[in-house]
Image (tube, rainbow, N blue to C red):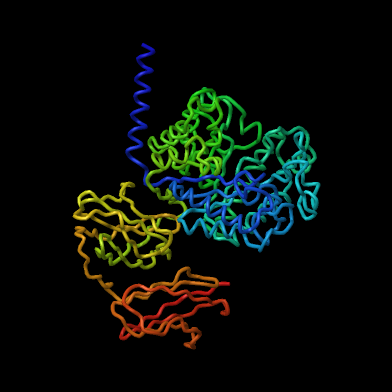
Length: 598
């Protein structure tokens, strides 16, 4: 009888996984941790030239994009140091060779380059901070401006190396780390802030913070409860500070994968709650994170059973998202998988998808995927990540959908379908379309925006054109387009276009209307894009004015053909304020406002 039930169970799992593969999720957070500490993922060596660093960034992102990965968690502060310019801490030794040193070659801002290149590919960039780790080992390069030198009294020493950690119980330490994080939030166009699990050390605490406890314990009589409160308080402060400054920036934490040993039943191991004083359930209950990414670095089965841990975390979310943290790096470990391929990770992803328990997957680490460890990159591209996925929405941050694109038109040219549409106006929350998805089916009856297999393109910006080269002469196709805002809410669809690809070149259709679109971004500093559509060719001028009607600049003044045109305008020499831009093309005259904000 036992064997019979085992066969039934395995059959159920196989059927479930097979069904999941046939039904790819339309929305799924797919990411990789890009670890910079000790040059794990990037740059490949300390002090690498800037040109080589940039080439490595491009290569990493291109490989992830080809795998339909849609986010990276980039480590910008591994040990109270910086992977960005003009910060409050010295440049990292793993970036420039010696902490606080200079670049080999022309200086650049690595974080800004990562952001720009990720966004070009339609990927989110979350800044990964280690909130308290100070010095990784006794052999680390430490600059005179480093916090361990400026404030040695803030540092706890632990472990054999020895490591140093900023003491989370000192209020000034919390203020300092918060200021470092918020400096990045304010200065960079990031999509998220991310913490890993380094609050109190895995090596264990003895009496290193006894003096701190005596000074700051308040009403607490048990040091463990006080330590957990220190972490909880800091998480809440970071969350609230981010939402005050930029409400759309996501905040996530990746704690150790076991909250308490014995929870859920059958799971045993180190307890994040009592051993390293992290109570992730507190963060979820108080909704002080937007997503949680437990580091469930174990296999399906055993005393740290992934198939028990992941569903348990799903029951604790309180309306927030669960993205699993998965140990791709362990595919070479015989205790992690008994097969010589990527199936363990693939099975974990498929278990995530059953009833949408985990809305995402984060791989540790990036090079395990891009290096195709045990064929994982090939396997993901061919199976779990074969189709692109949109980001899950976060309605507590934004639940207003953008307006739908308008005036979708098509042209068949040399066995290609050329689509063109116009950006919608601004929605009720004053947000505009940031990118678009193009859907294609073989008939209007089957086109369905809930079917991820029908998404043939997710644009990386607010482009309003797409050429479909993957069509077959003599076939019938249906197309529609939807718009998305910065938090990935999807609009209603355009009207469906139905056409037959005949191989006969059709006349190129002109746009339906004259349109002067809202500049993007707006407010801007210092560069913005102005886009307009002309129905007919005509002599056209586009000029900038102040609110008194004085002409500030001429963007274009020449004969312009029909179609959609984009121009960049730089307001570097302008003061902050409201300006007007005005187009005159034949009888078409339109004026809009834009805001320069320095």
